[in-house]
Amino acid sequence: MQTSAADLNYICERVNHLRSHFNSGGTRTYQWRLTQLNQLKKMLIEQEKAFLQALSQDLAKSEYEAWTSEVGFTTSEIEHSIRSLKKWMRPRKVSTPLVAQPAKSYQLPEPLGTVLIIGAWNYPIQLVLGPLVAAIAAGNCAVIKPSELSPACSALIAKLIPEYLDSEAICVIEGAVAETTELLKQKFDHIMYTGGEGVAKIVMRAAAENLTPVTLELGGKSPCIVDNNTNLGVTVSRIIWNKWMNAGQTCVAPDYVLIEKSQADKFVAKLKDKLQEFYGQDVKSNSDYGRIVNKRHLIRLVAYLDNQNVVIGGEHDLEQKYLAPTVVLDPPADSPLMLEEVFGPILPIVTVENIEQSIEFVNHRAKPLALYVYTNNSQFEQKVLNTTSSGNVCVNDGMMFMTNPNLPFGGVGNSGMGHYHGQSGFDTFSHLKTVMKRATFIDPTLRYPPFTSTKLNIVKKLL
Image 1 (cartoon, one colour):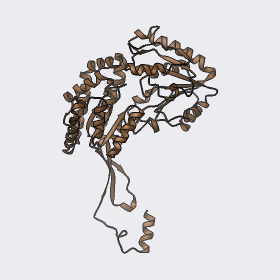
Image 2 (spheres, helix red, strand yellow):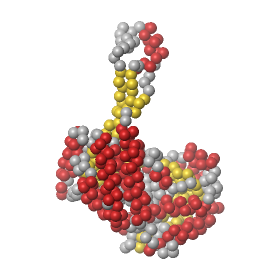
Image 3 (cartoon, helix red, strand yellow):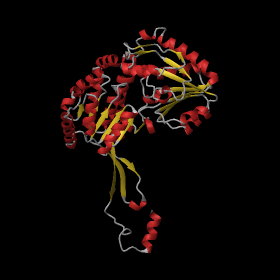
Image 4 (cartoon, one colour):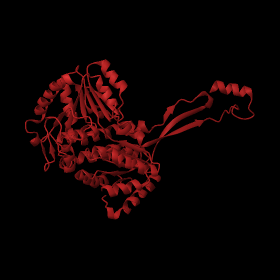
């Protein structure tokens, strides 16, 4: 359903309608949740070509990349949720202390209510529908707000969601700043936002007005530490896949590489060889390589290259929104390239005298969403794991942790708060209600007056 700045009252009316529908209890049942998840899966399968076309239109994603990282990825998330739904919905038993016996204690998952999901443009299908899977599984009504920067995907989602899902419980609001601002004025039971730190602060301030909990999936400068003790060919291949998927517009892409100075030339040479092997001599004409989302972002990225030592790439075409895979060697620490999240196909390489110094380099900066370490040295691996903080870590690969629905995904510090994927997503959109049920066939008098020293001594032992 589309809206406009001239008709913002619709947003308030629609949210109020969803809240009323939630209060009717229709979304709480297992059958409703299962039906909606199956319908969402059906939509992705039946409309696969339409989704692939929209992704190509917005970001020039190849069919392979669009399916694996968006359509197929989200379908897999749905299938995992369908298989696990009954288990997630069950009461979660916990032990009961002796002092409270006879009794049983458990946590009962219940839906939060009506939630808002604000998606991002870089993975415009996955980052809207993935959280929706969790919200539906948890039994909520949901408003989803696709990004206006990926207009083809936004329009397609707005068209298809009412055709496949329960429009009494799930609503799509398109638009830009005005619509998002109006949405944030409404009372929601949870807000999930995926995007940048600046807008996240706006979302959090708005949520505070209604004491609404938030999940923020942000980003930051995710480091990639490359030890000398590693298989260089495999390492470079995996870094290229991780970095240049979606033309570098990935929140968990490696933002920069840390490597010993003595290994830098060898590393750059291997990067050149592998980039040519993967994309050929003419990257611009290779359909496997994507485009920057718009001219404004491309201008931002090109400006990062001013006065830098570009050792690979740098070629760009504003009209075609193209920027070649680009590598910069030893950028100044105070340059915008090293102070801001790149979010594009530029890979800075920062050299250190000793790989141990890479840990200190990482720890002097904001906590990243992801950290990558390539090493066959188990002691160095453990040192990195034990002395750095990040939302997610992968050893000897890129963002493969995203493929495991049993691993929560989320940031820490400036890279975000909260988790989703799999049961973590279900729990994010649920309230785990504490329940204790006590028997009445026996009622010890220890807690009742008159209080005596004997009672106190017994209670001290029980507690």
